[in-house]
Length: 289
Image (cartoon, rainbow, N blue to C red; front, side, top):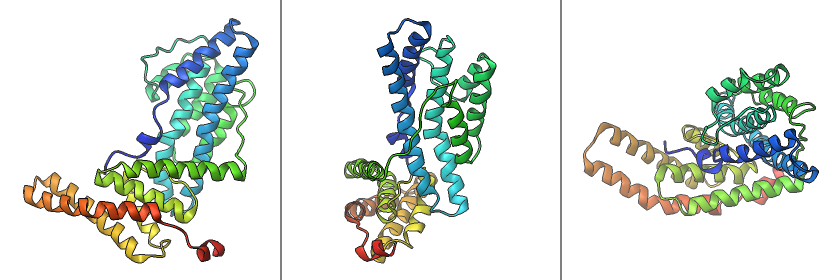
């Protein structure tokens, strides 16, 4: 499957957490003014709070799937958004403890392990649990560990769920961003990926953060949600063509075979986009929910 949508929606935060960490270092060294300290803490609050809110919203979508798919989606989120949050926490606390982290360093699991070995015990204990939770499959474990890291004596951040109005706005903005990407996407696998998550959100009012390999499960799920079965059949057909194209390319098949599939994909692409961008949950369905 094509590059995952997560890589487009959630960029690595290396430079951002480095900048925040540097500011925190000024705070701990006594070189910053009270106003600067508040600004730095506010920036960290916004970064981690924003990612945490997204993770919580995506968690709602995960819970709509069967157990096996929930596990796949949870692991994916732990590797992406949750890892970004963890990197921010590590970078900030490391700098608070006057540990140098090069701007050229790409924060990853190996770097986090090295930092853990140098941190004082009180920080090492809570960050070690947060780091370990990323290798599991439980979002609840991660969120519990994050609560501790954000607590008194560590990052001292307040993670607050958005109210219903703010939550609806975030979900709406997320769909707008996906729709804009889909309008400008011409690679079949990625277009199908984007279309699937947009339609999922339309019918469930929940966001989903999924790797490409879970797109088939999303399309299967949509078979029970979409009122227009012909449209769902188009999604399934397009998925079959995407898989067939990848299979033919892997087998080094005749160029003519690949070109025929490519032609079908290109012909169906506008229909896929139309289905995703114009899909609406009927009032009757909404009332039942």
